[in-house]
Length: 71
Image 1 (cartoon, rainbow, N blue to C red):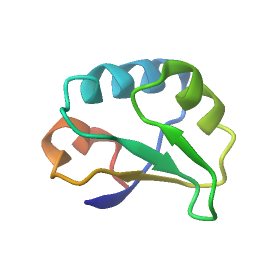
Image 2: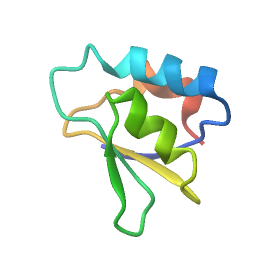
Image 3: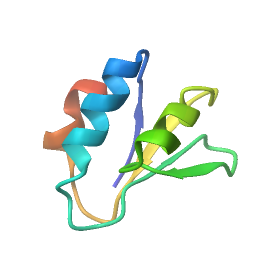
Image 4: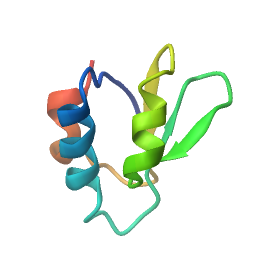
């Protein structure tokens, strides 16, 4: 599964990380151009706020967990 997401604030980031932490698979957030961070890492996700666009990638469907952030 790969979807574009939007995280505008630190609160969005904290809620996103909290939502995906329970996923038993890797959750990766990319900028679409090669930069990648662990979607379960608060520090990584705060860094990702600087990306021009955010894409969430996971080998399983986690749409229900992240739907409020999907663009």
